[in-house]
Image 1 (cartoon, helix red, strand yellow):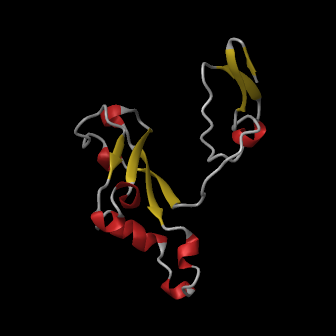
Image 2: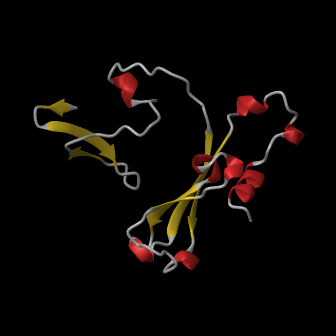
Length: 139
């Protein structure tokens, strides 16, 4: 809902199931165009499914204090064999014990080709996400 003062979002506390309202200056619909756009009558144009993203949420206490610049929250892996940044992977701080140098929770994401690219291959020759992950970070 939006009035002359800005948007009001109704959100639900996932632990209690209780809805509540939040006032904001802006609302960002980070849902891949699946919900908010159609609700507002906005038509999505262009191709979808250009990449398939795989994300792993992890706790890594070993990374506490390793961060060379605690102000940085996103780390891109650059592996030319995987098309540069998005195909190589990205790690994003999610907090945990804290932000900055104390972050111990991370999300690691990397892109793979859309499944249609492998549609003609047998299951045995399709690339496995684990093989892609290992190759992305060159371990």
